[in-house]
Image (cartoon, rainbow, N blue to C red; front, side):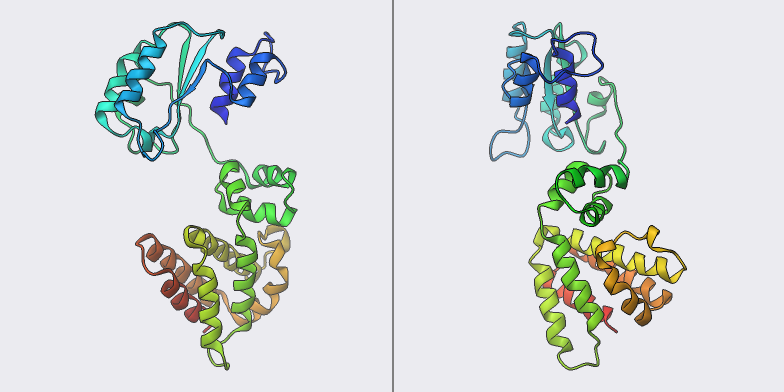
Length: 291
């Protein structure tokens, strides 16, 4: 988003501004994705990495002047995963070091690992830092989420508005609510406990790629219980949509037990990263949780 905003600013026809105007013909073309001098180099469909032929075609295109812009902007997103082959990166080094006149390269990555030092040394590195929960939550609220849902999503998005918006498209909060209420109302000694645990585990396992995020939400709920147990007030809580579960859960589990359950969730997350069976991981976790 920032790279695109920068490209729009460079070529905005309203000079002397601190930002692009959003109204001129250049800004409108950028917003619609039809600006001829903004080139985004992505892997070909079905491929994970940029091909060397794409870099050759890019260099050929750069031998001609821009169509209409003061600057041509070339963006290569996520180069930590799309440009890890040395021969591809090396084919671009000379162009990065001495780009054509009025040509700006913008390379983006979420982490430095995997990026060749020869690429980094030819760039001006601009680090990005996580946004506050309040800023991310405010953006989600403007998107139409309730304040409670927005703050919950912001808390697991690690300061990324884009990631928070992707998570907001899922039903994670509804699934988390069902699991928390089920765990609070279950105990190993009651009739139907096994069936109840299996049912909760089955629902959780259906989240597939989002299961890790679901467990992260469960971890945040446990942390709220620990905050209350330590004498904290509601202003320090994250999961305001689960207030009704806090009192009965706090009566059931003390600080030591909550710490143990926090560790259990962490172990389950590690097992999922090692591709253990999702349903089995959830069954073991939930059964241990309701002791």
